[in-house]
Amino acid sequence: MTYKETVNFLEKSFPAYHLLGPAAYKADLSNTEQLMEHLGHPEKRFRAIHVAGTNGKGSVAHSLASILQFSGLKVGLYTSPHLVDLRERVRINGEMISTEEVVEFVETNKHYFKERSLSFFEMMTGLAFHMFAVHQVDVAVVEVGMGGRLDSTNVVHPDLSIITNIGLDHTQFLGTTHKAIAGEKAGIIKEGVPVVIGETLASTQPVFIAKAEAMHSPITFADQRYHVRVDSPMTDERMMDLEIKQGRSTTYSHLLYGLTGSYQRKNVVTTLCAVDVLRTVGYEITEQQVREGMKHVVSATGLHGRWEYYGSQPDIICETAHNADGIKSMLDKLRTLHYERLHLVYGCVNDKDYPRILHLLPPDAVYYFTQPSTPRALDVNILSKAAESTGRCGLVYPHCKQAIESARLHAGPKDVILITGSIFLVADAIPVLTAKEEEK
Image (cartoon, rainbow, N blue to C red; front, side, top):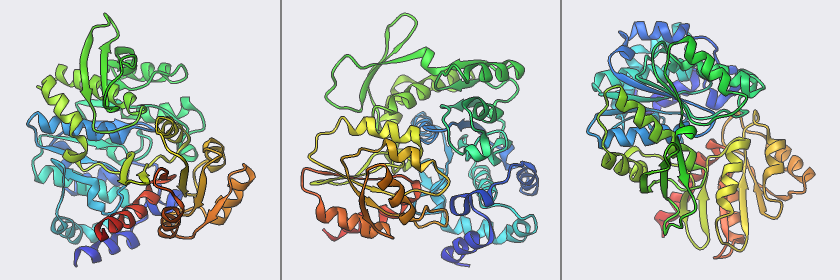
């Protein structure tokens, strides 16, 4: 099979949550455990750092991978979903694995995959762990797909577990309260393995403490350890000062982070706290390596879609915010920009709380409603009617390309075009935007 044929085979043969939603979700680790045995237990052949959370886990995972790369380690990185190419999910020192490796892995194991009725994510987890073992990575940073306790990635025994934060997302699977969701994500805490919690919430803190105590795991709340100073003006919005809360002495002065947005401060705090804990379990990481890793996180790991610029006059920005908490953080960032008018290209999938999200969006923006190219997409006509009921009216386009072209046509040079609402919408937008850039 060619690589294209292999990808088509995978997408047609195995249920994928990013395409089908609930029908592809499996709340069971048995398939993955049997797959690991079939593959010779690759998950036992590399050290790991396990990252869960509602928002921020991707940014933290990429940041840690970058720092570890700059510390001289060979680093695997497993994230999801992908934007354009499924190989984005499996990287080694920032580089995607080869198409040949994907084809060989699938051809060797496809009969097993079909016999066991694996999901797409289970198969991809097997591919990632197999590749990390084959390439003999020193450590793999592994991002949880959903939840934690029953996620396929939860077969690793890491050096450190991280839970960035808790928000109301995937409630049909994980529970409808912060406490219930925290209980699912706390499932990645392993016996004796330290855990870092990014954000302290009154409703979830007791859940994490109880689980950590039961597992004899040292627990650290990152926002109780580090504080980001915002009272000193910086020439670059990506630069920040961080202090240890006890003693108030500046620990990282003028730290430059490769990702923008005030909401990234939480991810920086979580990442730096994780580095501190990693040092206690034998990782040798210098301050300079932290600085280089944080500064070059995008180029070192191939991270895309986090407040990423794709044009100017007007500014064109892609942001993968897809739930209420993510949208709120995105809007905080938007308020720091100076522009004449906001043009918002918006589309989402059908299992998100879009009525709540629509109420959060700016009422004075110019809207271009569309839908991502996935079976999970919320029909744009349903979205448009729901938006109209909140006073947010706009034009309707069945395809992202049409929406972007219309926004480009109507936006002035001092305006902003923001494309958001779904990871899959951003995935559709990137080829359109990069094609436009190549034509110039």
